[in-house]
Image 1 (tube, one colour):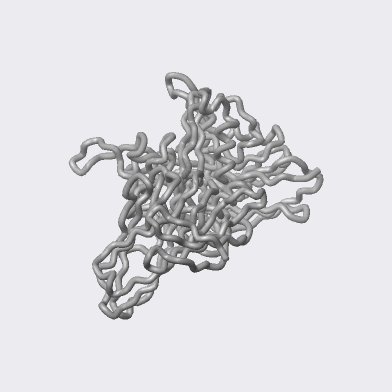
Image 2 (image 1 turned 45 degrees about the horizontal axis):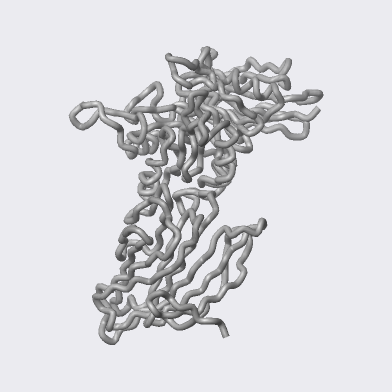
Length: 495
């Protein structure tokens, strides 16, 4: 017989504990015991990571409402342990055929966290964002309460409810969208560097006055350009994540990736895919060196990219160029093209190539660095466009494509230019579309002696012999005037 545990209210319940599946996919059996006067049963399943530390646990709260509960509230308690990074509730009940209605809300040990009534059956709370209807903020350990309101339940009615509450301790965040917005592999187009009212983004108000620019204006501009994904990267703050959480459902064809521009005195870097707080005060006790920041990013399975490393530092652009002491082997990506700076003294390409020549494998990306969503032309949203080959349109897939270097940068931000480069069986295959009149250009030690002066057609594939070549090799596309249209990423050739 399991021991009964007395709740402070005087009610009792009988807990059960069973092991779950690995890697955060728990499953378990419920255990019924004496309820808090209304047959509330609780079962708990702990999902253990390989290391043995607890990653997540799921509490299942069940109970029954009857006619006596009509127009009453019930607060169902559950425990949240220290170190919890998110609380997710998935709620269901029976009796809808008899017009039974059970509404939802939540309290933590210190404050009221929100009320969704009957408009949501699932919601999540974290420190930096929450499902609309609920408040983000610290997740204090202790007794939380799921609030159930019953606006209608007939005298002879009966409604059985189940609330599955997942308490996650893992720092990884997999996206605001519950599922990929598009299935299947392909080239997905996006902008990875933009600012809004949550930092220094501004635009004209309805009356023409300069005002902090609402985040939705950036998403409207991205949608109008036909982009598939964006990363909003306001400076050092997680404040915009709540906006992204609220807007992802509406922009169901535009993937919203949480980003942050870590702005230090020794350089700027974008962090993608992390919603947890991050230290940015490089050189202080909070972040004595860059490795402390990178450790936090990697622990959260995020991706860090150095921004505009070719720009100057000093009073002209404080901290813009990259001068921080850096273990570049821990830097998976660099912003080689920032806005219109694809070539010339402010380009990030030479800085990136120096890392490639040092034997590192770093993916080149681009970002508009847009600060006014209403701009057209230079530095408008989507110029340049970073194009990623991903398994589907989801945060995890897009970031994985960047890590693997399956990227090219469309410098002019067109909707359809394409550059596909493959090295296989001693041959290099280059497929270019929607760039008629342009020419191929080659870079890197593996490209020595390669040349092709013939203008490209509307859709064309060319092949080149890679015999006896080694090192990295990159293929770009340049327009008839010699300007860079498409920046490729390297293929790496074995000796």
